Length: 325
Image (cartoon, helix red, strand yellow):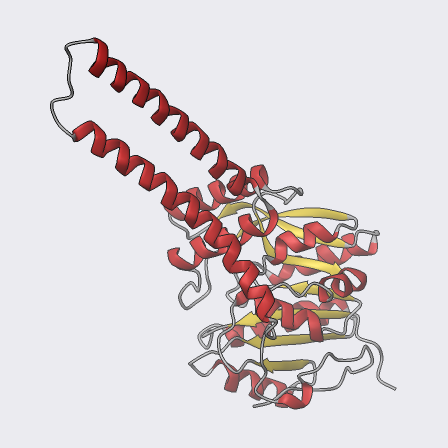
């Protein structure tokens, strides 16, 4: 009987053919040094390059390598979710394939886990190879999220973390569509601690989070864990409406009781544009929340695998399988 898997390493990948072999080598070296049974679970998120083929070759040579191959690109957070659905280990580690998060930290995470912590997340103290704009916007996002969220989401932490089996099972039960995994891990609770590290430059390839995706990701994080934007929209509408009412009273007073008149429509148009702008902002915020409600009501699956044979939720004893194209 095959020995139960101790560690599951979840690696979401998207167009990572330039780095995937190095990622495999470093992960294998680290996990072999720990001397415990493990699996490397790669989730191919609709890559258009040779990423899936490379992983299949690795899986042919190494039984610890397994591949989930999406039918198309479903997104980084969904890929992580699929990994948690299929992970069999007693401890589950999430790590990106670009090697900005060093695999060599996994033994430290495991040591904290063995001390009794159920979630061990990696906190960035420095970020190498990133522009000042990226560093500034990332810092702003995490602090804005922490101020807005109803739960305590750690600052400067990504998805790189180790979770106990029970935490992974709790995450499996959450099936919301617009996912912010690091926030959900904070929401489920359990005993959590951090280890600090310096984030490295990307080993090869290009970032998969350009500004547009980062903005969308930020919106997912804030709207998933806070109603404050809705409250802020209400406050803003009240302030602008009150200011407009005061301006109307002043205008009527000047018109009826003084010789001063308004020479043109500039001030009126300015007020109209301001009010319309505020209304559109409020409608936009409402639209974000309504859109998320709409996504939830459609009840579509979070992801689709190319091979439907293993598309259902696996049982804990299913440790020797591989999803192939």
